[in-house]
Length: 510
Image 1 (cartoon, rainbow, N blue to C red):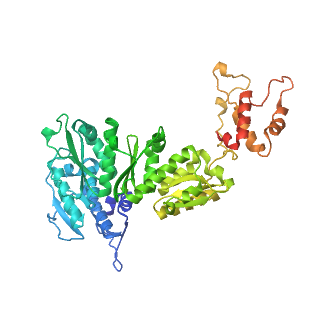
Image 2: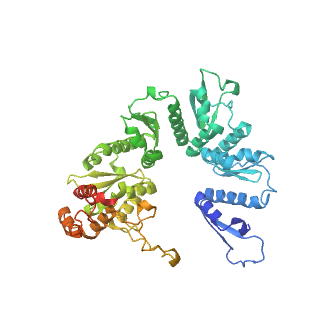
Image 3: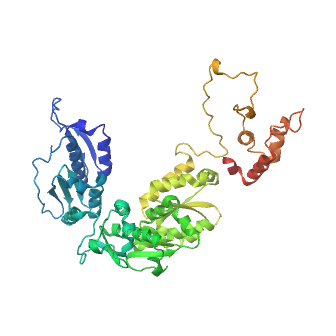
């Protein structure tokens, strides 16, 4: 290939991250590189599936600059390989954009729902994978080419790659969304392929139900199904939840439910569903909130783990979790307990334990505090994946030891001084003879009492009581000519400061 078509290397790095391969330009050992050659050799290292996906993506990128550079002599054919093969399909003139979708959404959807590699190089489609994956990709692509987003007449009997839901006909547009936006969002999140099965003339028949087919892998279908249930429950409350209960399901694959009490739902959801997603990643199961129920989807053990993590989350909201109770749980093997020194608690819990929240996102774990028999606090790291727990444990130890870069700013540590402002030129300096006050519109730079208090506390007040500190550092500054005038803060600020000191230095962080 011509290296100049790859830009500055960011395109190759993006492909490496997507397909888990390593690529670089070079020459084979023993051969001398020809500086006058119009092409260069690109080496791709990795497993077979990753190498093929990266190769096809690079070919597609090159053909955006040189159309039909690779595909001009390729003809359509099907491979007969059972465990690995490459099928080639030739599109007509205007079919490529339809099969690709906006920003490649349709192509990515076909690849994720079937597990195959689907890449378009100019007017040629390459489908790589096992025979089952390629067969499903061919079938889904045929449905897309018939009519994307329109109801289809498809036989779903005796198929193990589809889940069929019945929803009210008048809610079909709500599930689909404007220009199919809602359904596309669900497909992108779960890697599923969705379509309505009824004929077009029956699509908007009143007082009836329409069938929504969800194609893809088992885990993807269950996630998309629960997401549709949660979305439709917002429009028709009780449509799915009227028959739900808190009873556990003993089936190996399925879903369980837990009913929230009062305002538990808002706490368990978090900002932009961050708490819900955190629990799902740590438990290794699917979690969706359908109405006032939390629904756990997946295998039996994963569902139980997700339910237990939710119970601990809700319990820490109203009380303290005891380490002894956690150790008696059936999921104790999914937990790592880390003792925390008292002197490190302030840095760890600074700004609502923001450092722990960052660790949760980076390692796909769930962290919460508990107390042991000695009333000492410990951090519990929860995840179904031992590697994730090890990474989180390492980050927490670095946080305790202060080796993770700059420690968080605490009240006992004054902020670093700001750089000095560049002095004004002589022509723009203010005349010192003139008096400026807020009443005449001029700006004044006076240090606020709160800032004085914080500076004095950080500098001198660590080992003194409030009365000793106030007497030593504020009373001497009263003006002899005017006893009412003082550099000490106002009465309101003094009362607030005294309250903060009674609570502890943590109150001064603002």
